[in-house]
Image 1 (cartoon, rainbow, N blue to C red):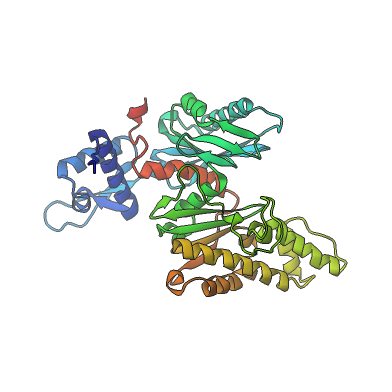
Image 2: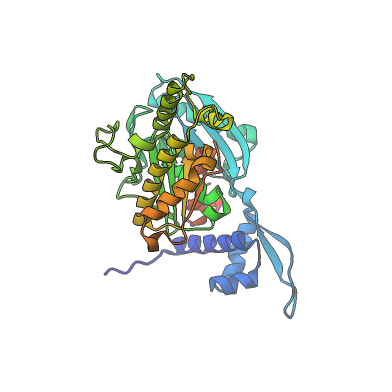
Length: 403
């Protein structure tokens, strides 16, 4: 087997990322501690630390306790040393944020789109919004680590092309290249559920951030999944491969929009839930609802008994979760979409079904919770596309490398 070796420049980036991660994780560390933890030489650690200080990513924040000799100078991570842009691209609008490396939002902006716009016109609009956000937030391109883009549809991760986006009407579109060339920074494209998965890993609950094996399941108009496996976003050979919503739950179930029958999406999507609620309302001669927020209000006001509907939906959620537990053996399963809004009414039954239907050893210790990130999950996830690469040393840590 051919031996794989790292080039000096690649090894340098890995070492820099390793040191930066240790400082970030431990809050405060001395140079001597870094030498012990990383097994790098003292001069190498000192050189890298000084470079990170010069770039504004690390600061000296005081002195620690002496164990003999001089007191060590403590180092602290500065998340504002680089800023990241995340953009959520939809047919009707673009919504964006600029945040630091901890995901703290410094600026938000949006721009409406016309459904009749060509792809080139949408790309021009993306550039216009991004330029405006940088200007208004007073963020220089030197401080911008990169731009993450969320696009609904199928993304080829080898070429970064949008292979097919039904909502946008795009096929084989290179959206990444013109934006990267314009701003001179890395640009990464991914689909909506994948970026929401990253948001959970990097900016979600302490439980989500503390694991390297997480399953994120989104239940909206459609149903999708994202997997963090050993700390890395799982992908197929070219695409995500996680068409979780089209997993067959009932061979004789209702027709799905994909053409098959009994898909999870045809049985547990937001639309299905609302349809079931409206049938229950019709039996009581009550007006229909159109949103999950209205369903939550109905439950609160107890105008109609929705327990049978919620129990049925929780059963389908539990079956879907059990399948994912048996396939991927995660530490954490996070539910987004309508289960987040109705968590108090469905999670107990969902957990019961999931644990009963998954293999005992596979389900042991699995935590199940609903997403708490809220409406910004997509843009935060888009920003996380850049943040994860930054901390892996796969982006230029030194701004001088791209000047």
